[in-house]
Image (spheres, rainbow, N blue to C red):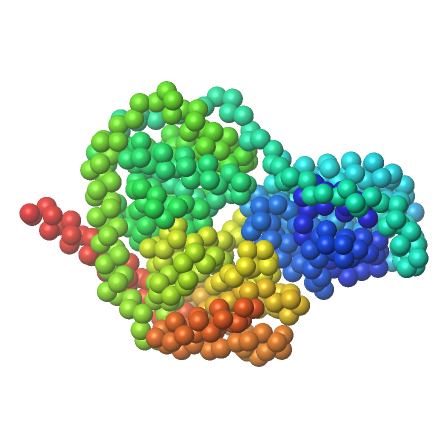
Length: 578
C-alpha cells in the first residue's frame, strides 16, 4: 500500500487493475485507496487492452495512469502499449508483480524473465528487493514512488516497476485492517501536480533570413498538456511576425483562428502550392504528419530546415534534412525573437497565392462531396465536421481515418481536439485507447475501420464495465481498406483479399450486442444527423456502423485529386490570361 499511496501523493489518480494472484497485495492496496476516494480504479481482464486504456487516459489528462499486472505473460501483454507510449512520448506507469529470487530459474510456476520484456522501450526500469517488497521501509517505498513518478514527468514515456512479492500474498481481513492502521491517510492531501522545467536552450538555433519567404510545418503535438498554451501563443506570434503560411496536421493542437493556415495542403501537394521566387525556408514542429506527399515535397526543398521538438531529444527527422532543437517552440521563440528582424511583407504574395489555392480546393470538395447519397469514406469525412457538436473531441484510428480526416475534413482544422496514436502507427488497442480518452475527458467520438475494431475486441469489456461516453463510428469496408490505396491493390482480387485486406466474417453489431453496447446501422448520409444525435444521446458507449466499398472509395480519392489538380491549373491559367 505504501508504494501506491506514495504515487497518489505525487499525482497518480487512475489505476488499471488486471487479475492475478501474485499481484494480490497491489490489488488490495488499490481497492482500499479507491474505497477511500484517493484513487479511481478500473478493472480489466486483458492486460494488453488495459495498458492501452491507461495510455488513452494519459493522453487526455497529461499525467500517467498506472497498470497493475501479475507475473508471467501478463507482463508481455504490456509491450504494444509501452511501444506506443515510448514513440508518442506519453507517460505510462507499469507495475508488475513478480516471484522472489528464490523462485527464479528453478522451474517454478509462472516465473519468466519479465524484467527484460519491456526494457528496450521504457524510460526507466526499477525492481524492488529481489527477496520481496516487504523488506522496504515506509520511507524507502516513498522514495521508490517519488523516483518512478518523476521519471514519468521528466521524460514522458513508459516507466516499469517490477515488484517481487514473497508469500503470504492474501492477508486476512483483520491483517488488512491492521496494515491500514499503520499508514497515515489523514494528511494525504493531494500534492499539486508539477511538471519539470523544459530543457534549457543552450544555443538558440536560427539561421533563417527573415526577409525571405518560408513555411511552417506543424506535425502532431507531442508535449505536456500544460505546455500547449505557450506553444499556441508562440505559433501565433510566428505567423503574425513572419507572414509565413502554416501547414498543420490535424493532430497539431493548433487553434482554429490561427493566422496563415493552409488547410487543404494534402490535396494541394505537390503541384498545387505555387513556388516562392527564392528558396523556401522551412520551420518544422514535431514529428512529420502522415503524408508521403509532404515528405516528398520537403525532400525537394532540400537541407537547412529547422526542427523544433517539445523536449524530445531523439531524432525526429527521417528525411535527414534538418537541424533539431529540443527546447520547445515557446522557449526557442523567446530566445530568438528579441534579436530577429522580421519582414512579413516579403511573404504576402506567397501567402495570398496559397490561400487562394486553398479556397479553390474547398470549392471543389463542396461540389464533389455532397452530404447525401450512399456513404463513401471521403464524403463521410467531409460531412462529419458540420454534424458533430462544436469542440467534441475526436479520435482517429491510425490507418485510413487519420489520413482521410486530414484530407477531406481539413475545414475543421483546430475546431476540436483530435487524437491519433501514431507513435508506432499500429491499429492495436484502438478501442481501449478511445475508451480511456472518454473516461477522462467525457463524450468522445472514435472513427475506425473494421479490422482495427476487431483487433481490439476485448476493449468492449471495458465499455461493458462502466461504459464511458464514447460513440464509435465504424467504417466497415470489408477488411484493410488502406491497402486498396497502395500499388499492391492491382494484384488479383482473391490474392489481395487473402494476403492484405483480410476481410472477416464476424458481425460487429452482434459483437456489440453481446457486450450490451447499443448499435445501429447507417446506410445514407442523409441519416447521419439523426444517427449522431441518437448515438450521443446514449451518454454511454454506442456503435454506428457504416458499410463502404474500399475499391470504389480508392478510385474516388484518385478522381478527387485529379479534379482538384485540373481546377487549380484552370484557375492559374485564367489568372495568367487576365
